[in-house]
Image 1 (spheres, rainbow, N blue to C red):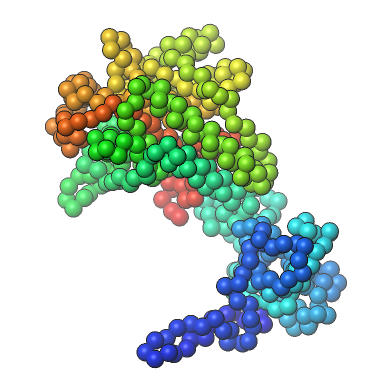
Image 2: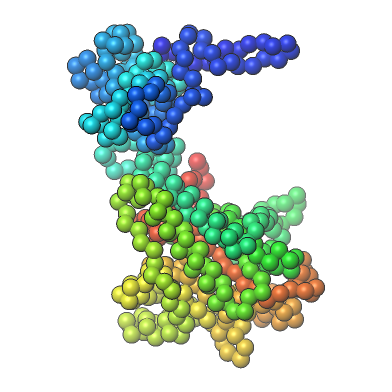
Amino acid sequence: MGMEWQGVIKEIGPYLYISDEFPHGVSVNLKERKRSDDIDPETDEEVIVAGWVQTIRKKGKIAFILLRDRGGVVQVTALKNEMGEEDYGRLTKVQRESVIAVRGKVQKSEYVKRGFEILPIEWELLNEADAPLPMGVVDKVNVELDTRLDNRFMDLRREEVMAIFALKSTMLSAIRNNLEEKGFLEVQTPKILKAGAEGGATLFKLDYFGENAYLAQSPQLFKQILMSTGLERVYEIAPAFRAELSDTTRHLSEFTSLDFEMSFIESQDDVMDAVEEMLDSAIKAAIEDGEKYLEILGIELKAPKRPYPRISFEEAKKMLAEKGKQVENDLDTEGEKILGEIMAEKGYDAYFVVEYPEEEKPFYIMEKDGTPWSYSFDLEFRGQELASGGQREHRPDVLEERMRKKGLDPSDFEFYLKAFKYGMPPHGGVGIGVERLIQKALRLENVRETTIFPRDRFRLVP
C-alpha cells in the first residue's frame, strides 16, 4: 500500500496491453471510482474515491483527511489501530495536494459537513505533490491575481474559482438550448482571414504562407454570407481576437464571442427579442442549476426585469446630460456607468440602447432612411456594454455605397458581396462577449477571472 500504481503489462498474441491489476495486490480500481457528490450518505456500501489531499489533521490515533474532487470535499477518517502503524504513517505524511485513491466504507456521521465519512480499507498514492506549494488552495491568505494566473493549474483547484467555470458552462449550455429551440444551427467559421470586418486598427496580423492574414475579430462577414444559403438561423460560440491597446478589468485580447444571425426579420426588434430571451434563459439556468456554485461565491443572482427597456441613443444622451455628463456620437465607459445607475434606480439591470448615429457603426449596419441614425443596438447590463447588433444592410448596391462611405474598397470584399447578389433575405444579428457576460452576472472584479488561461497585452503564458 502507498506505492505508485503502474498496472501490469500483459501479452495476448502480438499485442501488449495494460491490465487493471495492481502489481502489489491493491484493488483500488479507478474504473469504479465515485465522485464525492455521487455518494449516498444513507448507505454503508464500499466505494472508491480519488482526488487531491486538501488537508490532513491528526488527533491521537485518528487522522482526518479531506479529499477534494470536482464534486466537493469528502472526509476520509483513518484509524491507526485499523490500518496498522506503517500504512497509517505513510498516509498521514502525504504532502498536501497529492493525488490519492481510497477504497473504503461509507459511514453516516452527523459531525461531518457532507453527512458521511469514509473509513479506508486500502489506499493508493497516485502522484505526490512537491513542497512547498506555489500558492495555497484553501489557505486563508489573499493571493494576487497575477500569481494566481501564473499558477492557474493550482488556482483552478479552489472551489470559488471552479464555481465560476461551472456556472459559465451551465449558462452556455442554456444559451445553446435556447437558440436551438428557436431553430438556430451551430456553425464554425474561419479564424484566419484575408480582411477584417471592422477595419485594421485592432487586427492581429500574421504571415500566412507568405501572404498577409489576420486573426478574426468576429465571424460577422461569414455569418452574413450564411444567410444567403438557406440555413436561415445560425450561431457560433468561438474565440475572437482584438489587438486593442487596453489594459483594463474589462478587456481581453482573446475572448469568446457568441454570435448569431437570423433571416427574414421585419426589424431589429426581432433580434433584440431573441437576445432578451436567450440572456434570460442563461441567468435562470444559473439560478436553478447552479445554486451550489452561487452559494460558494456568495452571490444572490436575479434575472433582469423584463421586458428590457429600449432607449434611443438620443434619449440616452438627454438622460446623461441631466446628470451633467455630455456624450457625442457614442457612449464612453463613464457614460455607460452613469446610465447604468439611472436605469438601476428605475429597477432595470438590462436594457437596450438603440439607433446609434450611423457614422459610428460598421458598414454592414442598415441606415435609418433619411436620418443620421442606424438600425443598431447595444445591450447594456449593469452599466456595461455586453453586446452589439442590429439589422444588416441586405441590398448589395446600398451595401457597396456604405463601404465607400466608410473608406473601404468593395473590391477587397468580393467574396462577401458576391453572396448578396444572388438572393439575400433581410437579416440581423448580434455579437456578445461571453466573458463580459459572466463577469457582470457574477459581479466579478476582473474579466480575466472568467477565462481559463487569459490572454491580454502582457500575458502569453501559461
